[in-house]
Image (tube, rainbow, N blue to C red; front, side, top):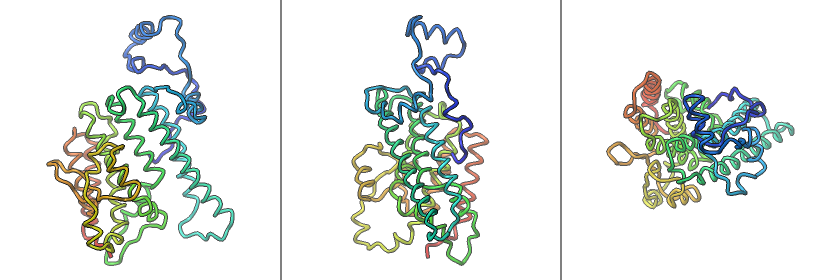
Length: 331
């Protein structure tokens, strides 16, 4: 998620089949049989991935009743991820604390923020297309995996995981640690969005049966864990300033147990109403005001899944992070 995809969208000119059954064919004869059975000998595939993305950018997909297959939707996320990584790389050219007196630099930073907003707008259009899938977003495990990637890319437009990892590697001592201004802003100005997307990543992964979860699912849990952890850390001082009265007014709700369109989440994203929680194994809720508990919760989720050397490595990394930051207290 932090490295640009190898393939360029402009080079993906090969005609792609429209139906998932063709992508899942195990042999050429099986592919041909499914092709002819569904479409007849006169059928011609309609567009390349490059054509599909161009049509998407022009608004042609969202302004029609077209329904894309889960595989087409997954492929359409490829250029959106490329755009996001490109903007993240450009952002690194601006050093932390650089003066804004240089007009060109200020314009460039403003332009970058506008470009991120454009990508976010495209992601919302993609999500609208995903909702059109036969049976909606609950159609199949492939759609769930697509939505996990959608939420991860959405997080990438807001916060940078390598910046979080750099901050997390700082020495935990008596002096209060402060993240960079950009990282601090991305976690405090977008608190609700960060928690929302992290919660949806965990929810969707739990909906996918263990035997068909994509091999990268532990990495998705890791990214959700460290972003939620950093967001909780960055907002700790603000939380301490809240009056007990206002905190009582915030009713807790299971952030990772509600559909993205649920009215409770809509209100939370719109006005910050409610107190978001993660759901534990036993059904009880975990406060997101406890940064280290977030990491422990995600480690337990990894242990509940199928064990691989990759998932064990992610567990160890999150466990070490939680232990390392255990002495931390909000100043």
